Image 1 (cartoon, helix red, strand yellow):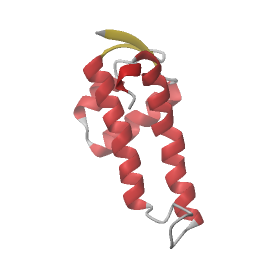
Image 2 (tube, one colour):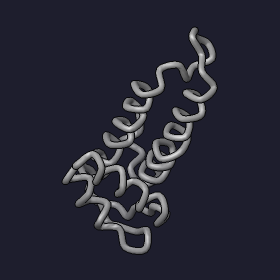
Image 3 (cartoon, helix red, strand yellow):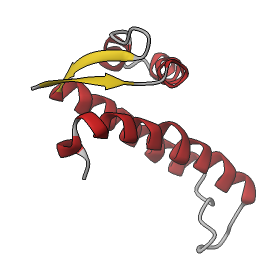
Image 4 (spheres, helix red, strand yellow):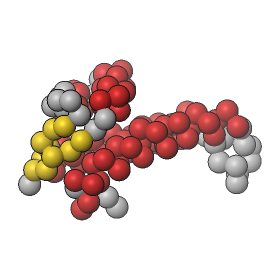
Length: 106
């Protein structure tokens, strides 16, 4: 199964930068498929992008462990840095990919 996926060019570029920094060749290949924000992806490629988004938020949790204001110790700086990833690239990738591949959103 394939579907057309739209990622805003700035989101795609940001994701490509992060994938390049992490040296994830498959994610880099997939992100380079996007032309003016659109690409035809198969379900495995879409799933890989969602795995990448999950990795980014898990990495942010490890880097900023004091982000949660319901657990001590709490740090406002950790919360802001964590939410930048969580509500930024993570949420946006899930939203855009999930609209084309709703079966992948759990």
